[in-house]
Image (cartoon, rainbow, N blue to C red; front, top):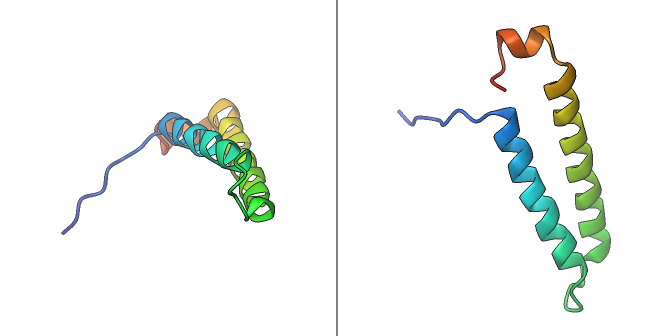
Length: 69
């Protein structure tokens, strides 16, 4: 049986920040031929980060009962 690591919302947001930085860097490279797709991915990462931050700040009852901060 495989064990899974529990991660917190804060750790998830930190990971998304790294992915955002990576995508932003790649978008600035001349070799990149998939800029349109990467722009969409960047938008999705930014939306995911904003949603997680909102949950972290306003989750209240949900966070105190079932989700680690």
